[in-house]
Length: 103
Length: 103
DNA sequence: CATCTATTTGGCTAAATAGCCAAATAGATG
DNA sequence: CATCTATTTGGCTATTTAGCCAAATAGATG
Image 1 (tube, helix red, strand yellow):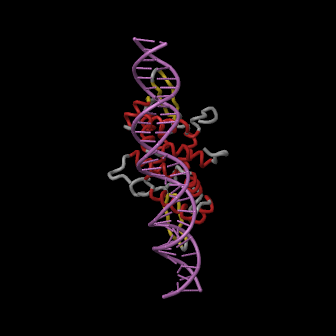
Image 2: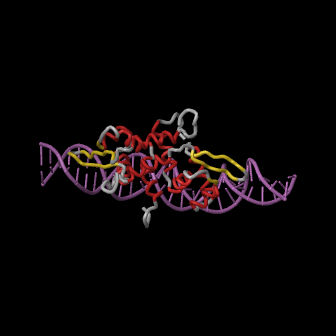
Image 3: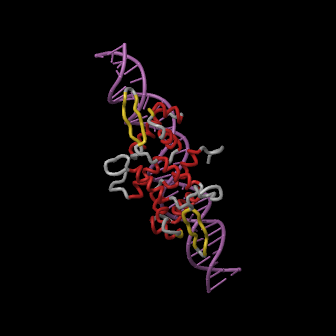
């Protein structure tokens, strides 16, 4: 946590970093189809529950996810419907290296 | 580096990670106004030249940047014109946490 | 109220990343 | 060809991040 106010680039990079891990990204992608509880997401990525929980908290703190407790479970969901567009941008950036095949 | 072929999420997260560092992001943002040489970017972020060079190589390997040597300098530029759109998505995601003010 | 279940938190170790310095490189210039 | 300049690479240490286990928590249910 920065002592003083974060710069724009710092705030932005916190969000970007939150999505820049394969497991976190996979979970976020899965949430595009609707909310899921922690144990479902644990199944998806196959890590320890505590690891998954920490990944989810990190994304929630970055503002990317929301969560809500209902019954025994905690359901996580995307805070914003813009992940699809984000991924389209990423895929375009991803093929900057091989321009011939895409972009 | 993964031994076998990277999954989609792994490929995507490599690109995302490349932009998920304040200095790297600031440099990429600066390049939206056109190519710049390493020493200009060093001025911008204020780190050691070798650090800046490594950041730039990382982004180039991720496919985000291109570089070209002309005269004594090496000029880096964005490989894709989609960074602006990417940042708009990031800013939308960034304020998922405080929905009232944005999104 | 005791217990059970899903999740989070704390604590720790291992792995990845960042940053600096010094040395190497590649190309320009005298 | 010697040298100078911009950049990269190697090597190292410090910091951050990831992941697991065990313990704590919060709420549901008997």
